[in-house]
Amino acid sequence: MTSNELKPIIIAIDGFSSSGKSSMAKALARTIGYRYIDTGAMYRAVTFYAMTSRLIAPDGTVKEAELTAALPSLDIDFSLMDDGQHTMLNGADIESRIRSLEVSAHVSTIAAIPAVRHELVKRQQLYGRQKGIVMDGRDIGTTVFPQAELKIYVNAPAEVRAERRFKELAEKGVETTYEEVLANVRHRDHIDSTRAESPLRRADDAIDLDNGRMTIDEQNAWLIEQYRKAALK
Ligand code: DC
Image (tube, rainbow, N blue to C red; front, side):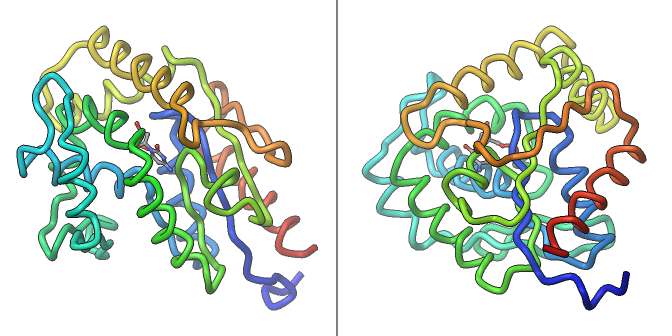
């Protein structure tokens, strides 16, 4: 099989938080030479903006009208650095700040606001115009690209995901406990799957990947196989 038999496609990878979606999406994009878009990072960037602009109170109350008015002026982009892709907001590198527990604690609230979703979905669809893209999130196969040629729905038990996230945070020196991380994962699962606007839902034509028991290498090989099948059709 030569690579020019493969047509450029859109690959949508959806699933719960900390299911390993981003790592697998990134690895796949790198291997097949596709662009990778982390849509969670876009919701995190808006959350970061809302927090630093005092549009969200510590109790989670959001000044929705003000945030909605500010959305068009937010320039959210990705920049390739030595250690990977960094999220940029109005030219500033906010990559490490959007991964904090504070942003994680508020992001589901911000991502449930219809005006925020409409704006970000519109921007995500623009990224897909040329195809050749791997996008991960919650609603990519259902709302952003219902026509995507390949849709993967990733799942793993909340405990497995919390364990992974806890290790990741510990490696970064973030002080937290496994119980705190598990509570955050469960809280986000609940909001992300029960919100009125584009809840996390498996697309009918998605392929399931339960990666709780797969090694990273097995997962990557499996994904490339799915890509080849979809791009050959
Ligand atoms: O993938 P992540 O954990 O970085 O995503 C952060 C939050 O953004 C998550 O709680 C749900 C939300 N999100 C969303 O609602 N829709 C997407 N397409 C991506 C993320």
